[in-house]
Length: 603
Image (cartoon, rainbow, N blue to C red):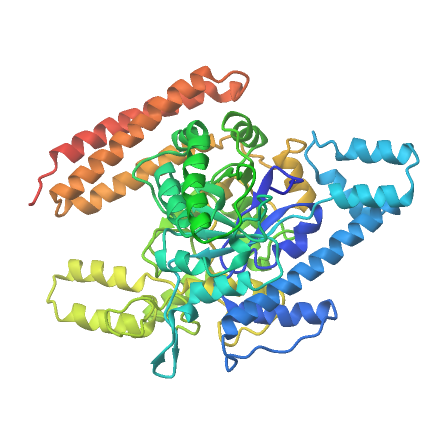
């Protein structure tokens, strides 16, 4: 495993918000993740950056065979090349005591030994070649990682002819990464795609060497232990090793929210901590059998896994707790970095909206065409654009990019549920149902609330860099987590990193709840909404699901009561508030359980 400079990473955000983050932060040793959804956006940025860094550029048009994969490979190679130049410049600056090296050292965790070691070496008067060798060994660049949403794997066509599965969106994105010269990781999110996982086994870079190293690593984003074990073993049966399990809070996160059945982050992390070696060893056993069968190299020593987490963390104290108590290898800080232009790419107007956003402006919506709850910012310009079309009597997007044209209800080639075409068909079918005015309006809203996020989540980068938005329009979707409410100003990278490491504090509000408590209440609200919807015509199956969900939340409260009771030296200032909120949560759940049990059930 590579040695890391930092104890945090910047997760993927949206489609465009971290599209070029490695160019901004990797030279300081900070890991970040690029989304591979939008190859059109990627190609535009490759052209821009080729000009900026005076690198040769030849356009990859959509007439080129396998253009999606080739655009992604070329962009990732460019990013890698420029980051390598930047880290070399930092090493050179160390020898000339330049600013970029000072910035690298200043951002390191307070307990990093690098500063003292460098000081000792220079005071000792080490020669230039010794210093260079030391820098090459110890000054690490941040990992350039990529994210693939496994389910966003649309079939593609050449005119009317369906292309082979290898040309599907997620498959092509994976090939683009596999063929690049990056030594990084692919983060697989949004659940299992067996066909895609099988396809990964075609690329040698994902297999271990006899030294237990990898040219390219796999990170699995999961929300519970069972999912990690199932997917880890599934991949191992293909000869593929998961180097990191990245646990994300089901609801206290940005972007799409994949709610667990009421399993809270604390108990989930406790299970991973307790079963970490069991997970590693049981999967390694499966892997080695498969590698042997494939006649491939088997690592001489045990393969390593990292366990990391993200979702809702907001203070230095929470960061340290996650590292120390749950023995995590890294903690993901997402939404706050949207307010750091030196790390992410957000246009000015959206930055202002984010900085002034309060709790009431951040909500879990149904706007995503993927049909998964989506954390949203009220009155973002993409939703306003959608509402204007509804008012004109022309609901739905023109669907210029079609990345989530996955619905095959009306068309074998697939359409997006946010598109004008799909909504036209759905409304026509709705008109034929002769529903009451209220029921009709309810169903109509469900159809038209879908927003064109596959375009909206990338447009911010085009606006930021003054690139052409003729195809996309200027509407921006943005998907911060609920934690955004507690950050209210645009920050420098140094300030944000100092906040993470406890050298500064950027949260001026005093009412921010503990991350575990915040998540609990988001889940209670989610359960309430689920119950309200199900009440209309509750089935036995739904009742059972809701009852189990509530029971799991209560188990979580019991866990937290014990956890905070045994916790010494942490959260001393607000422990009373934490226990009060847990008691209140338990009362709310008791009432919800009674309601669930007493709802009239239709078989």
